[in-house]
Image (tube, rainbow, N blue to C red; front, side, top):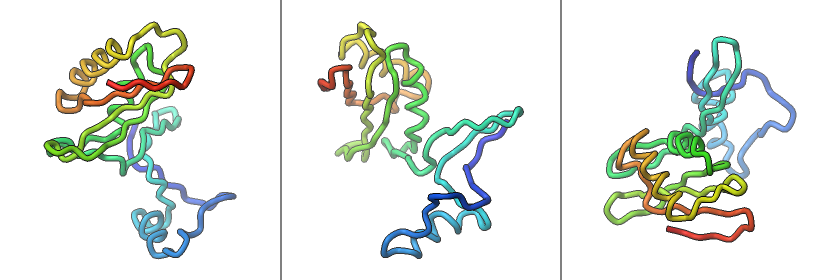
Length: 152
């Protein structure tokens, strides 16, 4: 049972070999952090049985009111809600906090029966309890089965 960076020791078919017009950046990003390994940029959890679970991008950090918050942390909490099929968390510029966060759900579980307002309130409360009050998003965008968007 251990967490860390997902790195690969051998080349594979389809592996990137450079970044167009910036080979130095490719080397610095993928080969320098862990010499002898290809750094994927993802975090991983390995169980004692040898199973791997990706935990999210290691570079997806939002700075909210001076608190560094990984987007995967928030997505993990949100994805445990019965109405949410999957989620993505992104940051956006905020005049007071520096960065705010917005959650996008694509889509809700079929026939969840939740309204935009009810779901937004429950998710903010859930995130406040599981992570912290400052982590509760200002904006929540829900995409329903018909691809019609609403925001709160």
